Length: 85
Image: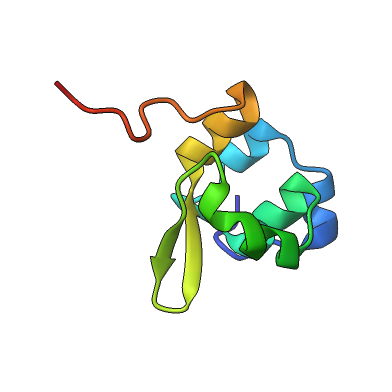
C-alpha cells in the first residue's frame, strides 16, 4: 500500500488488514481520528487518556501502528507499560 497520509473517505473502507499493509510503522493523529470516528478536538482533549501509546515528534503526533491495531482488535494494547522481567 502507498506510503502517503490517507484522508477521510479512504479510511471509511479500511479494515485492520489494510492498516497492517501500510508501509509506515505509525499512523497520524488525523488518520486515527478518522478510524475511530472522533473529532480532532476530542482526540487532542483526551490524548493523554488513550489506551494506546502516542509519541510526539516535534509538533506532530505519531501513533505506533502495532499497538493501535492491538487496541482495535482487543480493546487494549499488549505489553504497553508492563515491566519486562
